[in-house]
Structure formats: structure tokens, C-alpha cells
Image (cartoon, rainbow, N blue to C red):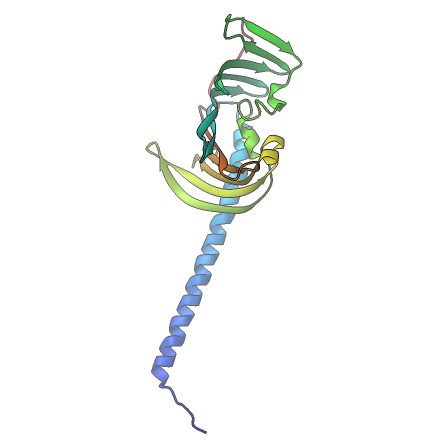
Length: 232
């Protein structure tokens, strides 16, 4: 029997290198875990702060993108909200011009042909699938769970820096969850109070593997003086 004796120095160096690699890996994993915990806190606070805002303005663009048909725009709408129950939107919905005012349980829709307003009492458009995002942009933040979340640090948008989160939630939205899957979000938050500044949402259609939904939302003018009254 022969014993192979290795020089001590190379073995010591190899062990030291291994220890450094393991410690570095543990350090990176620990840092990433802390960052993700920080991101979860930011997201929770951001959604809560945004929902509790007295008022804000927003812009929504939603479209379907497929390999066969290219881009099909579902909506291009600007809106404003005043707590607790006043909304005004204007833009294009499914290739049709629209302007709508919602006050409590009363909706006013402008007839684009005559310019007159039609009053619909007791209609909660904010609860319908057709207007679910345009009237209530924060409806895309109803989640059952957020198992995958990554805090990306600061990201520059329009000359300003925002906190960027990327996550893949399990959504709780009657329209979205029945029609789409594999949701991926990018959310930019104001660093000061973590309220939402910008959202990019992408999801795969359940009916067509080659088709995906893309929703872009921008929010600004938090707590500004905005008046939304019944149209004359």
C-alpha cells in the first residue's frame, strides 16, 4: 500500500479559497434576502399609501401583443381620482372615445355624438370588468400572494431616481386571473414615501400562448387639489 502525501501549503490554500467562496456566497445570499425583505416592506407600504391618498392623477395604456397580429390597443386613458369615491376618465377604450365621471354610485357618460351627458343611477362601473383598470388602476394590486420579489435598487426615470421592484404575484382580480397567467410586474416607487409612480405589468394569455397583455400605468399629483363634480 502506498500513501500519497500532499504538500501542506497547496492544501491550505485550497481550503482557504473554499472558505472564502462559501462565506462570500452566504454573504450575498444574506444581503439579497435582506434586500427582498426591504422590497416587500416597500411594496406593502407603497400600495397602502397610494390607496390612502386624498387624490391623484394617472395614465393607463393597455394592449395585447401577439406574434400574429402585432399590437392591439385596448385602452389609452387619462384619469383623476378624489377620495373617497370620485373618478373622472377620458380617452379611448377599445377604439371608442370615452369620457366618464363616477360619483359614488352614479355614473355620467358623455355621448360622443351629441356631446350630452347620460346619467346612470346605481351603476358601479368601477366594479365591472370593462372598466376595472381604467376607473380603478389600483385594482391590479390585489394579490393572493407574492412568492417572488426582487428589489432592484434605485432606477432613473425621467431624470429622477425611484425604487424599482420586480415581482411575480398570484393575482386576485376576477378579470385578469381568468384570462391571463404568468404575471410579471415592474413597479417604480417614490423614494420619500414609497407611493407608486409607475407600473409595467405583463401576462400571458391563457387562450393564446403567443399573445400577452401589457399594461403601463403612471401616477402623479398626489394629494393635489382636484375637483370632480357632476357634469352639467
